[in-house]
Image 1 (cartoon, chains in turn blue, orange):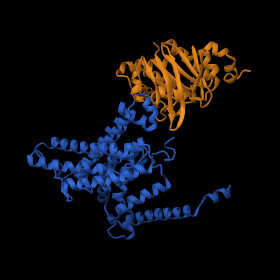
Image 2 (tube, chains in turn cyan, brown; image 1 turned 90 degrees about the horizontal axis):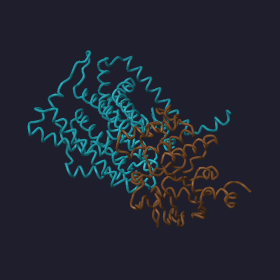
Image 3 (tube, each protein chain N blue to C red; image 1 turned 180 degrees about the vertical axis):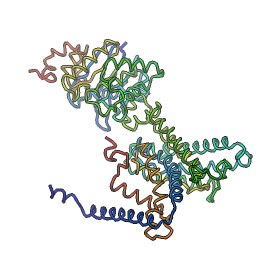
Image 4 (cartoon, helix red, strand yellow; image 1 turned 90 degrees about the vertical axis):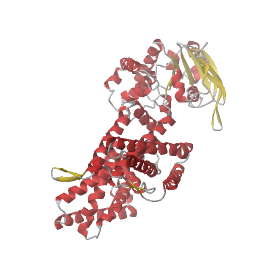
Amino acid sequence: MLRTWRQRITATDIVIWTIGIAIAVMVVYGSAKTLALGKYTTETWIDLAITGLALGGVYALIALGYTLVYGILRMINFAHSEVFMSGPFTAAFAADALVRLGWWNRFPVLSLLIVLAISAGVSALIAILVERIAYRPLRNAPRLVPLITAIGASFFLQYTFRGLYGSGLKGYPEMDIFKGFWMIAGIRVFKTQAAAIIGAIILMLILYAIVQRTKMGKAMRSVSEDKEVAALMGIDVNRTIATTFALGGAAAGLAGILYLLLFPVAHFYMGFFPGLKAFTAAVLGGIGNVPGAFLGAMVLGLLESVGPSLFLDGLGIPAAYQLKDAIAFTILVFILIFRPSGILGERLTQAKA
Amino acid sequence: MPLLEVEHIHTYYGHIHALKGVSLTVEKGEIVTLIGGNGAGKTTTLRTISGMLKPREGRVKLNDEDLGKFKANEIVYKGIAMVPEGRGVFARLTVKENLEMGAFSLKSREQLNRNMERIFSLFPRLRDRRSQIAGTLSGGEQQMLATGRALMASPNILLMDEPSMGLAPVLVELIFDTIQQINKEGVTILLVEQNALMALGIAHRGYVMQTGEIVLNDSAEKLRTNSMIQKAYLGME
């Protein structure tokens, strides 16, 4: 018994576990030290947590696209970052037009609906085109091939939009109704953050209901299990896959508007980091699993926002907040090593069975 | 005019010539069985009829309409439903959701509910387990589910691929009883089976396949007493 157990442990395992334990110790020690120092007040922590949840909401909506596409095609759509970018980048120009018309603050709800519709529409359209042009012809190719075209499509879209809209930053106009903050039980909550959190939760619930309850959603889940048998039920597999891309794209487009509320600047490169973070969130929650995407995104948003100050400040690391991306991607690496199935997911290797 | 008419189909898997001019007919109201050993082309024949494979030559006709230009999912709308080999239930969907997917081709919600009621009375076990995830059902229950799911589409003809596979004898009896019952209710059945004895027991007519060809076709009764069949497929000397 002991011998087989020993044989199974390789040098790699030892290195990985050592690093893992070192990081865990660092996190615990850093947190304890930070809290002991008392540099931050409770309000600050809550502020950071709310920021994290708002960010998490945006990640959740983007992560949905990764998770749905993975569920149905067992591939990571690495062009999803650009699907996300295309909607809000386009909508930022529409917002400008609405400002010039004088509608932006006179009819804020209508304006918001227009901007959301444009953003969701453009992102969904781009997602459908990517599937049709870059993935469908390669449906039966080895798995590495669509991964490569995904990266190609991603660059193609980035530079196409750069060509279309320019390489500069495009400001997104602030709306009067989102200015300022609310005091909720003595806690200051920016209206933009509240809107992002509530908006993300409502949209996630709607999208989840679509996947779980509607005929189309059930067809999507059937296709993700067995394409041949799904066809025998009369389900048009190609159309269902396109619909899945459209749904994930629309969610990303909606996320884009929430993102612009928090960070009111659009540019051709804006999809890169949120896209990678959302991918991390999807893996963290368990890829292929919709509630997992939401949970993973919220956890990631919180860790990214609270983490640097909590874990790293106490260790005397200067400007810890700039290491938030390092935290996010460290999480990705360790999830992939220690629990590739994520929080709620099944094992990746078994997912196909 | 037969309900289903298969005319000289040649189907290939890549370079492998799997079906070499298979012809068969199924009349309305019949149970027709297709028997033969492993690799004889029985499943390939069903998959060609259901549109999952396209024949390189020959035609499949339903009610005299050539199905050649339709995809598998469109053929369902023409009235052909299939219980695939190995059952193919959607393991992560509930029993009820599986049945709803079987009715994907139906337009009306009422008919869906009517069909589901009918299937629940045919298989009371499925009613008890309707909210259960299909992957947790036993093999027999999954076969009932796969059969029920195919019937949800109100098909004119039901293609069944090895319904007895991997089931205990008592469950095989139950499934075959149900096949007879749904046939009496007006569903035409084309049944592919390894278990030739059981299949010939309920079928009206049978076709015997060998290496991609039909070698014999006759009434089930005659096939049961045919000495060659008895020797090769019924395990009698």
